[in-house]
Length: 274
Ligand SMILES: C[S@@+](CC[C@H](N)C(=O)[O-])C[C@H]1O[C@@H](n2cnc3c(N)ncnc32)[C@H](O)[C@@H]1O
Image 1 (cartoon, rainbow, N blue to C red):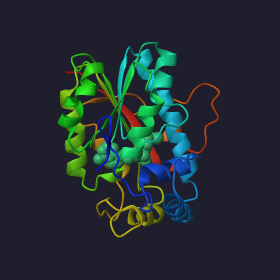
Image 2: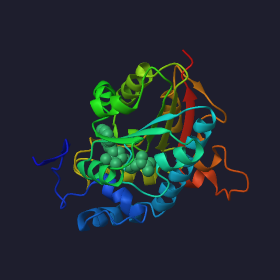
Image 3: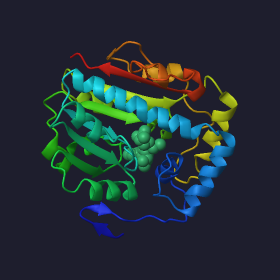
Image 4: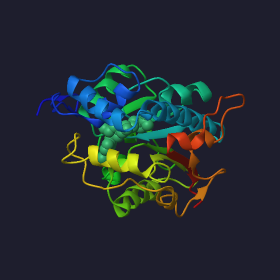
């Protein structure tokens, strides 16, 4: 497999890939014909996917600004996706100059693009790693050069745990990051849920899995429910208003808020007290 500056370059553009499909939903240009075709199939099932992606990015920005205001200066964006508008380092550094951001994704195209974009930014780093091994992510040398795990950190996992089929494994992953973080750290999660439109989300679950159009994603017949996402924060103190549909999490003053449940995805932030 080809390598570039420690990043694996092995990918096949003929095989649909969720990071590039997500880029397509966001109106990006870093996608191939196979990604667009798979994305179109997903859009037939759920035409609201681009709105959900946009609301997810808006939520990410609100949460990062909140965390910066709470004094956080280090962020780890896990399953960061292809660079888009309102990347974490842009939001964090606008709110608190000098904030440091580590981007983590297991996708080689994501890692390569992000690295190219951030080459000259001494406050960011890109790590190609699999979140299913939290200790390897956090033990990565490049991450360690930038992020001090003895200091509070914000761990952001946006629309990525959805790819982990069992609740046990999702909880294990979250625990791995939480346990390694210093007291005073925060965890932010965004996750689509099955409560509002169970038929739609079951069809999407079938698309995004082995035997569906996106290979490499293990089988799950339905995505998590809101209560399952709430349990991922066990052992931490959830900030108000808890785990809520994306637009309902602390909307900015004057922000136009759409019907929260229309995006059938939730988000929350919790603090590690001890
Ligand atoms: C739907 S995108 C979300 C992108 C971004 N977090 C956002 O909310 O805009 C999910 C991302 O998670 C990455 N991903 C999926 N499984 C992963 C894993 N096991 N480890 C690290 N990244 C993963 C994918 O490559 C993709 O870029």
